[in-house]
Length: 130
Image (spheres, rainbow, N blue to C red):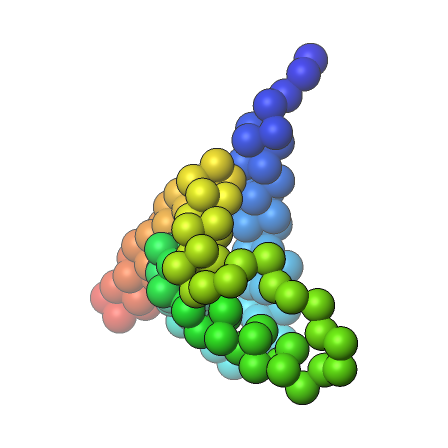
């Protein structure tokens, strides 16, 4: 059975995002004084933060900084190779074209982060009213 590269990427991201949870939750639950609701809240905020930061990065927010920083570092090198792009706009357009064809699966982080936040809220309510 042949899988498309995009499907392989989604499978890998979903499996890694799902495997990180028990690897982090179990040691925190058994070897720290944190309650399970606090652990879920912390991981949910981290997952949603990762999705948000990747979205902002892929929107091209840091392209100008990246272009100028690489130029500044190359100015300190002797015989530095010329960059691929002459201007920051060329660099931005090249990166946006690459991003258009290489999507990042946000939904793995958004869905799992939201589920962790809901589970945190439920566990906190159970803990308060039990």
